[in-house]
Structures are given as C-alpha cells and as structure tokens.
Image 1 (cartoon, rainbow, N blue to C red):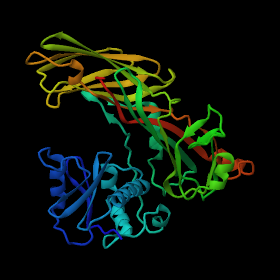
Image 2 (image 1 turned 90 degrees about the horizontal axis):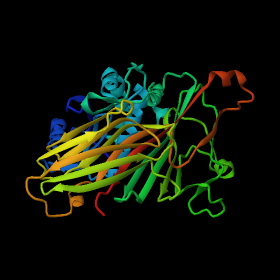
Image 3 (image 1 turned 90 degrees about the vertical axis):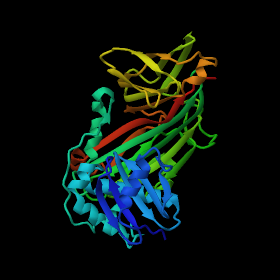
Image 4 (image 1 turned 60 degrees about the vertical axis):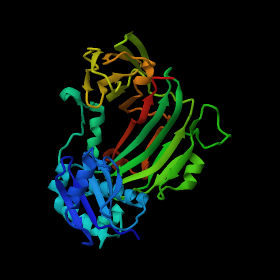
Length: 445
C-alpha cells in the first residue's frame, strides 16, 4: 500500500496554506525545498510534476493557482499518487464548495478534519465522498469567488455564459434539489502550415454533481446513433467515439440497449463517462491558423497570422490566447492587431522569452482575426524565415458547444410522470464546454 509522509497546499507565492506530517521521517522544511525547486528556473527540477531531492520524492499538481503536494521516501507508483492528488482536490471542492486559496483558508478546520479521515499514518483509508460525509462534522463557510482568466493588460477574460458554473460552487451539505451535468471536451490538435489537420484528439467526459434530496434514479439519454469503436452496424453519419470508460455506478445493460446512462447519484462530483475521439475527419476543428511569412529586408521579417473560427456564428469563444514564438536573436518586435470593440484584443511581447502573446476576449464563430509582426534581427538572415518562427499554439474555451457531437437527449429524475410536484421543484442544469489542450499549428512545412 502506498504510504506518504507529507501532504501540503501552497499558494502561487509559496505561502503554506495547509500542511500535515503523517510519519515524521522527513524534516519539516520540505515546503521551502519544494517551492525553490519548482519556481527557480536555474534548478534542474524546475516545472517537473515529480522529482527527487535529498532522497525525498515530491509529487504535485497545480489547480486554481495552488500547488497540491505530497512527499514520500518510498518508491511509489506515480499514477497512484497523482490519482490520489486529483481525488484530494475533488474532495476539498466537494466539502468546501470550491478549490481556492480563500475557501481553504476559511475552511481550514474542515480541510484538516478531511485529511485526518483520508490518511492514517500516511496510508490512504478512503477517497469516497459518500463515506466521508458521515465522518466530517464541521459546517462549511461558503465563499463567493467568480472564476476568471487573467487577461493581458489587466483585461479580465470572462464570459457571462461560463459564470453559471459557479452555481456548483456549493458544499455537498447544502442540498437544494438541483443537479448539474457538464459535458467537457478537451481538444489536442496539430496542423500544418496550410491549416490541414495532421493529428487530432478529443478527450471528453460527462461529469455530474448532485444536490438532490435523497438518491433518486437518474436517467441521461445520449445520441441514439452513438457508435463505439469499429462498430460497422451504424450509419455513416453516426456520432463515433473510439473508446468509452464507464463509472461503476452506470447500468451497462441499459446503455447497450438504448444509449441511456442510468444510475443513483453519489454525493459530490462524479465522472459518469469518459470518452476519446481520435483523428475523426468528420470533426471540424474550431480554429485554423494560417501563417504568411516574408522577408522585408535582410534585417527584418514580416509575419502575418490569420486565425479563423470554424464553429457557428451564434457561439463565441472566450479567453482566446495565441502564443507566437519569434527568433531567439530578435532585437525588437512590432505588433499590429485589430481594434474591434467586440473582440477586445490585446497583446504582450515578452522580450525575455522571445514570444508574442495575443489575447482575444471574445472570438465570434465564423469570423477571422489578424495579427501582424515586424521582427528586427541583429544581423542579415541567411536561412528560411519560416524556420525561425513558431510553432503557434492556442488556448481557448467555447461555452455551450462541443466538437464530438455528443448530446444529451434528456435528463430524467426518478419517475417524472408520478412525481409532478417534485418535478417542478427539481432543477436541472446542463452545460457543454470545449477547451484547448495541446492546440498548435506549424509555420514551416
């Protein structure tokens, strides 16, 4: 069984928020040792999620600007430890309402109580929310925190459509007869200089958080034409996924018969289903990047980039960031962007990193945006300009839109026909979100 020594949470500044020593076989200053290694670029362990220092194994994940860390002297399985850290994050969010520095500080007594139930002498006892509910006796202190993405030039890249997700920022003890269902998709894509897709992958999941009274039977119906793997008995236009991974609470027989997810909801956040779509040519990627590189003279390069959105005009992407690396020996970089009030564009040239960050607060569907760079070099350029710039990468979020085509046909709670009174009181919230994973485009062929 995996045994850990320390579990602690640090802020982005390195402040200790929560810390627990379970075995006392490692000195207490490990928090400072960890933070020096992950934040100092001169250290060989800079940015690594797992590393060994002075015979101590450090494992960490970053969530909401926090470092969630555990240590061990044993040769532990990294997959097991990272799964444990992810579950710890979910448990803190379940019991305090949200995973943030403010929430943990206000509910530190509850978080310590949770950690004492989660571990005994460094060994994991249980990570099930429904079991821990009976062991936690402190009342949560709710915090109001609207999640934002820090934009450039003090812009706050936030869209009203995504704010509704904060409705789930409630501790599980607050039963208000609501259920939230999120269909989340993360896109990994690589394109060539002409905008053609070389590789693509969609990693999706259906996540439920229930605040319903009792534990009624929930039925969620998916597309009738959903095809799995190499199933040849479905039409050409069917929604196809390569693989599905079900939570153990799902009734598999009902899914096979009618593409319906039937389950009794557990306390807290539950991932009902995860799926993967790989290199599906029927899926149109949400953005295409087209580079245009030319030599202005021996000392200057002009680079223009067109980004086109290939999703419906009724939808807009939010918090769009385009990262464009420039030559390492560039002495200056002039930038020209659009001044459309609707998109609210901004940019930042990071001279130390030799990269231009282009921010677009709101990117409407079926539209194009342009950026132009004029790069100055210290000496005449003798090689292909395209090899000096890129690759271009993107980060974005598209609310109420998904790329795979997976849809929820209905969401039923219990026997709706027999419980009309409860049906009117129970609230159902369904949200679709598409986010960028590793989304990049080449500049050179």
